[in-house]
Length: 273
Image 1 (spheres, rainbow, N blue to C red):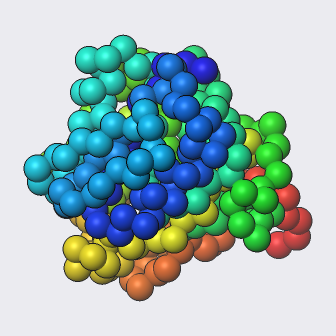
Image 2: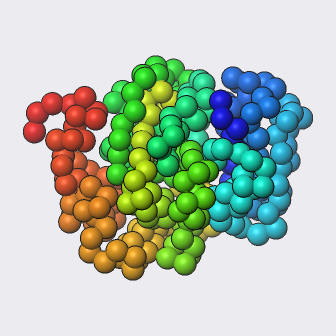
Image 3: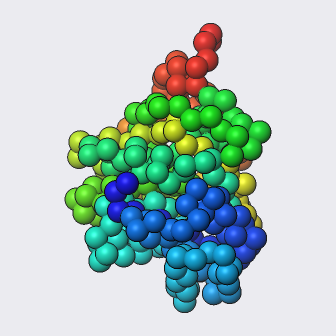
């Protein structure tokens, strides 16, 4: 496996951080030399369990949020010589072999890879969602996609060096929309973005957002304001979306959000109209 820095942003809910660490250490009870596993404690009260040997705890001193934690991880990777940076929400549960399967998807021309999941974007959904993450059956399939979700994402450090960090000016709050922007920049520069069916993540969704008092409409507003400022009315087409994407009060993407619904159905193994 390529040398990897895996950062878990945490803001309260220690039981969730404990659970995702157990999933990670289930495969490698002793953190291997090619993996640097870090919990970035943005609230300042997380205590590493005694069984989490080899895991580093960093107290950020402020709430860096997802976007700030990601950019911090980019800087740390450059300092330590990591080749891949993985950002993993703490409110997730993971399939077996998660880290190695996700990192393997970061091929030389891949800027960002994400696990398939049960969450917001249809083009990233698992074709068959398991009853729990550990029961997921892996498939040696890579989907080339316009962008990937930041819930469980691996970045190629070479691409980060070329493209720069996430845009904290356009996305000054949590960073909703920054993953889309970074993927569009990467593809414009000739890189690929992929979803791997080798690994799966179950996302509990919005645990941290609820704790800090942000609503789904706040997050939608950050996406639209940031992307509109950067791309005007072109970003939906660049992202493979149609003009109706992101209506008010949405709770997930729908097939009619996409410019090519047939493509999305094909990814999910669906047929018919």
